Image (cartoon, rainbow, N blue to C red; front, side, top):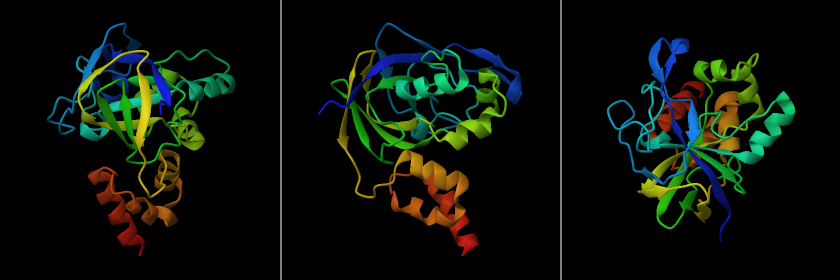
Length: 222
């Protein structure tokens, strides 16, 4: 069953990034009117960084790599933020690669698999933890804390099957794991509910570095 669609595919335009002391950021994503190839980029620091060919990433310590190969954000959540902030928010402003419609991105399960178009398969990994670059781009007071508190994070995805994506492609959810842990629930627990951290370990599809971090925190608290 087709669950939704890609409104736009967004690729970054390199900009200077004084907010992290880096020479470049790729957060300035712009919609493109042509197909974009996606493929697993490899390790975060040493691989190809973004899952989208031609999409730059400046902070390769914290962004990109196989478990953050693609970032998706829902138009429905943009619409909610527009009312909250009383300003227009075009797709790509939050730095996402895919602006979606008709998909419950935050309600997606960790490890859920999406088929985009006819070939590409993506698997959700975790929500977006906001950073100073995002804060500077939005120019909203206490944006990092506000974005995290509202828990409309969007979802990072790994690439299971490479191919091309374009605006208008259908998105079909083809697999949902049995654990029932959503992007929103996992983010809330990780950020605000340390007493429930063990719940995250139910999701085998959680990125390995995140699993290790959670397991260490659970062990220390026990």
